[in-house]
Every structure is written in structure tokens, then in C-alpha cells.
Image 1 (tube, rainbow, N blue to C red):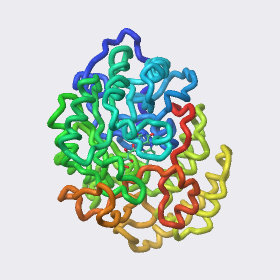
Image 2: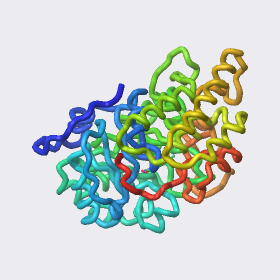
Image 3: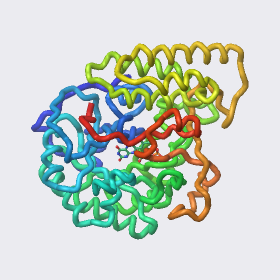
Image 4: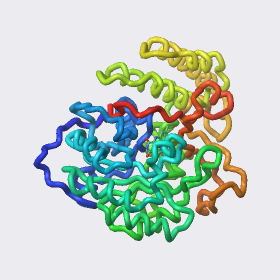
Length: 405
Ligand SMILES: Cc1cc2nc3c(=O)[nH]c(=O)nc-3n(C[C@H](O)[C@H](O)[C@H](O)COP(=O)(O)O)c2cc1C
């Protein structure tokens, strides 16, 4: 079901920690991650229909934020910023505080663009600055501030870091169980033991992020980390029904036909007044349809050629894909790699990085044998078609524009 729209009363008391988590957010367990160019309004709408209980906007750069006043975002919603200047961050966050339930600070982005811009995980060693960023929002915003971070190679330092985030005023900590160095081909597995240690060390709710590929991973992650919720990025992009249980399925979850999901997504895009950037639409379609694109080469190439906001050609590709998938399903072709049939939405399983690359640590026992999918976007990697050819459709990190929509 699509989320309800509501406007925040400026007089609503500012709740903290678990009171905020329960009473304002409704104790979510299934959270859609902030994703540049991918967790836009249309995608969030689709996600909420398929069980997402809380969603984050894509990261907005507090420096580039232009006064973008809108009403009626679906709730609950957390707006994420990246920043390195507390006053600039406060000004940008103030402009949007009435349109969200909390403001999150991105302390996890490991990409080169974040290094150049001095934000995300590249602040990870500047604890005074991070404290100030969080505390300025904690003290001055009418809504709570939350933080999304990566772990350090050392468990002890990770725990100290999380405690500092809490002291600064973060009311939820999302812990992505990978280090800053775990990116691109080095991504590897998230370390749930560190997330567990963080959860035990702080009193505010903790969201666990990393290694969620299928519905069954959710219960395993919650049990192993003790976290209050799981946040998913890539797993949820490849199967937006990731959060829907389906006990009869081997993965424990629902795997709708991907062309149906793609059509549903396009319908949402076409109905929203807020435009969805064509790059975002294309990125979603490449990921959704991925299980079949390697065999339907003409459709892959046609999708790759599409530019611009006219939805008609996107519909043409997806309708043709649906026709072929329905045909295959009727002919009952047998399952391909990973046991999934090529017409259903399914996780993209990447190989683990080669041994002994930087900071790839021993994975938690339960996920040690499973390859992982959680590669974050690579800004250098901007050709979707090329990536499908190379078996990789990770999304590029687009410049932050007015991304709340
Ligand atoms: C397409 C894409 C865009 C992302 N954009 C953001 C972002 O804007 N802010 C952020 O904190 N993390 C961002 N991330 C990282 C994810 O939120 C998440 O921390 C990471 O992918 C690990 O989760 P996963 O294993 O479920 O993919 C992005 C990831 C992807 C795949």
C-alpha cells in the first residue's frame, strides 16, 4: 500500500531514541536505504507497496541544496544530507524539516566524489567535526537527527565511534557493516559482528545494513546483530518485493515477475507530478530486468539507447520483455543460475573479492559461503549497457540535485 501523506505539525514534540522510533516511525523493521538516483519518490512509492516501512531520500548535498519547498511526501521519511559545514547543513536541513520525520547525515559514502567533496566516510577520522554536524542538528532542528556510518577495521574503534555519534545526538544509528575500503570490486561482506557490538553499546535504535540479499537474510541479520531493523539498498533494487514474506519460497520471500514490477514502476512514474530523472528510470529498469537482459540482447541494447523523459519507449521495451517472459513462463523453462527463473526479480549475486585485498575481513559464519551483492555505486562507471555486458549493473553516483522528490 502506498504510504500516507501528512504534514508535520511544527508543534509536535521532538521525541528521541526509541520513543521516536516507535511513535513517529511506527517501529519499522524494513527500511529502504538512501540511494542517489534510485530512492526517489517513485521508487519509494513502489517500495512501500511491497512492505517497506520506512524510506530514505537519496543523499542531498547540503552545499548544493536549493530551496525546494514541497508538500505531501509519503511517510515515514528520512531525508539524508551529506555535509562538512555544520551551519550550511543546518540551513539546508531547516528548509526541509517540515517535510520529513528526521534528517540523516551520510557518514558512509566511500566514493571518489565524496573524497573530493570531503564528506561521507571521508569524515570518519574527524570526530570533532562529525560531533558538531550531528549536534548542531540535534540542538536546532524540530525533528531528530540520525546518522548512517560505516565500520572501522577495529571492532573497538567502531564501538567508540558509534558511542560518539550517540553522544552527539544521533537518535538512530544505521551501521553499514563494511569499512570505507570495502567498495567497488573490494566490497566483500558486511561484518554483522561489528553491527552487533554497536547495538550492544548504544541505547538508541540501530539499523543493520549490508548482506541482505533475500527475505531469509532479514531474520538472520536481526537475530545475529540484535538490530532493530534492516536497511537494504542493492538487494531491494533488484527485488523491490524483498520485504514481503512468502513461506513457500526457498528464499522465504516473494519474487514477482520483474517485467510486471517494471511496468508497475513506470505507471507510478507516469502518475507522479514530481518528475523522475531519466537516469533513475533507466537504472531501475536495468536492475529489475537484469535476470533476462543477458539473453534478450536486443532489449538490453534498446534500453541502453534510451534517453530523455518520454516514457513511451521505456514502456515499449518493458512490454516486449513482459511478452517474452510470459511466453517463457508458459513454456515452463527451467531455472537458471542461482535457482531462480529468469523472469522473476532476484538478487544479483556478485563474486567475493580476491583474498587479501584491503580490509576484507572474515565474514560472519552464517553468510561466509554466500557471495554478496552490496556494491555501492561507482561514479566512474557510467555506461549501463557496458555494465550489463560485463555482468554488473551497479548504478552510478549521480550529482546531487533536488533529490528529495
Ligand atoms: C545505487 C546506490 C546509491 C547509493 N546512494 C547512497 C546515498 O545516497 N547515501 C548513502 O548513505 N548510501 C548510499 N548508498 C549505499 C547504500 O545506502 C548502502 O549503505 C550500501 O549499498 C550497502 O547496502 P546493501 O548491501 O544493502 O547494498 C547507495 C548504494 C547504491 C547501490
